[in-house]
Amino acid sequence: MNINIEFYASLMKYLPPGKSRFRREVKVDDGITLSRLIEQYNIAEDQAHLVLVNGLFVNCGADRDNRALVEGDVVSIWPPVAGG
Image 1: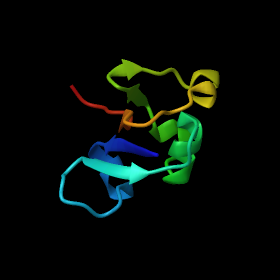
Image 2: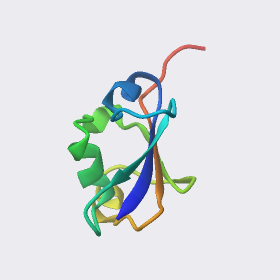
Image 3: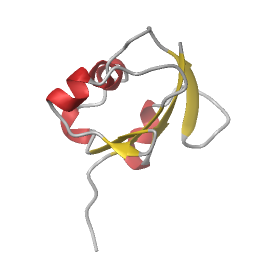
Image 4: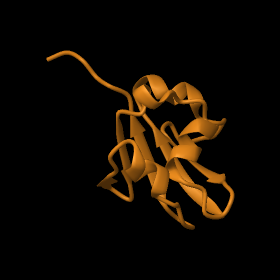
């Protein structure tokens, strides 16, 4: 199935090649969980600080472990940020 991934800031280095700066359409296994997707792109759990699926926040831990993705989902991930 196809989904869109968006990685921001320091996580952009994990995006596969493409034309868009932040977003890529990628093919993933049917029913892949959010946690598994994050692992697949070698993003450490503590680096996936803010995670949204279709604009809705998903808590870490069990919420990400149990959140199965579906065709057309948009997964957006930001690392922890600092500053003021």
